[in-house]
Length: 125
Image (cartoon, rainbow, N blue to C red; front, top):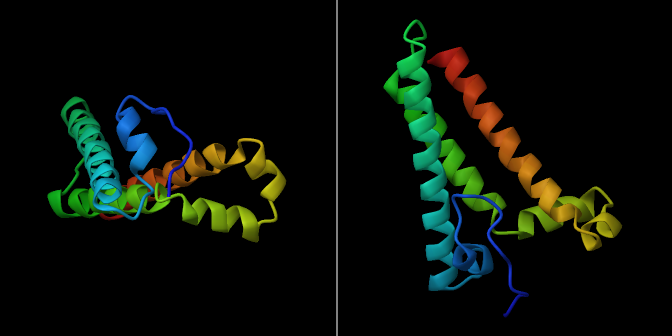
C-alpha cells in the first residue's frame, strides 16, 4: 500500500525511513529497524555522555542495556503507525487524527517510553 510522502521529523531519521517505516515489507521493516537502531545509538551516546560528565551517578551496564533495548523496541513499535491510530480511535480522537494529531500522539509515546527508561535506570541502575 502506498502512503503519502512523509518527510523526516527528526535529525535521526531519513526521508526514506519516514516514508517506509510503517510498511509490512522488507523495505518497511528495514527502515523501521534502522531508524530505531539509530535512535538507540543516539540515546546510548547521550547516556554515556551523562555518565561521563556526572561521575557521581552510578549507572550499571545491565540496566542501561535493558533501558536502551526498551527504547528501541517501543520506538519501532510506535513508528509502525497502527498503534497510534488504534490509540486515537480508542480515545475517540479521530477528528484530531484527521487534523495532524497523530504526530503529537506519536511523539508523546516516544517521550513516555524514554521517561520510563530513565526512571528504570534511576531506580535500578
